[in-house]
Length: 183
Image (cartoon, rainbow, N blue to C red; front, side, top):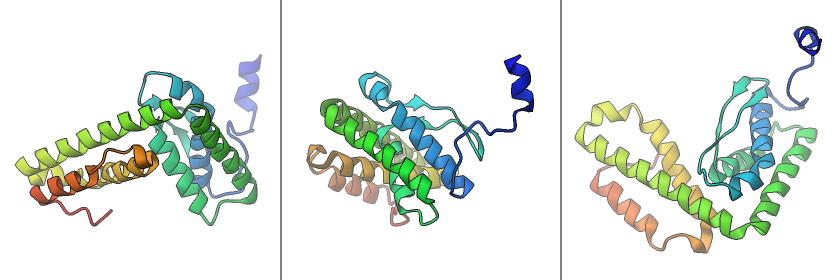
């Protein structure tokens, strides 16, 4: 009989929000990632698929530490985030801080793997773009987002980041004549 109730139940399958739908959806994604943070850190997979119901429909973001941090940062800077949603965001931030404190080595290991993944993708893009610029220019926006993530993960790693990596990366970009000023 519960399936019948589901057909007529008008309660949305996501928590109520006092923010615009796009921010509410992003917060729901961040909460789902925060809820899985411990399992994610202790597991082997770098990219963890999350499925959530939001006011914007079903979403399937891939979870990494950088992606979660990106959402936290965006939500913290959002002026339209309502007071109740700010409390929910504070719980996500607490989960982040707790996980970072309890699992520092796993945290660093995941961040290093994420950095490696983004760097490989960026280098591949630069190499392919050099051989066929018109074909690869269509992907530039997505690739620049991944390039931003390289910098973000480097900031999260702090003193554990590879020394001189940004200088090497900028040299590579100059060699391939790619402007990343659009970041």
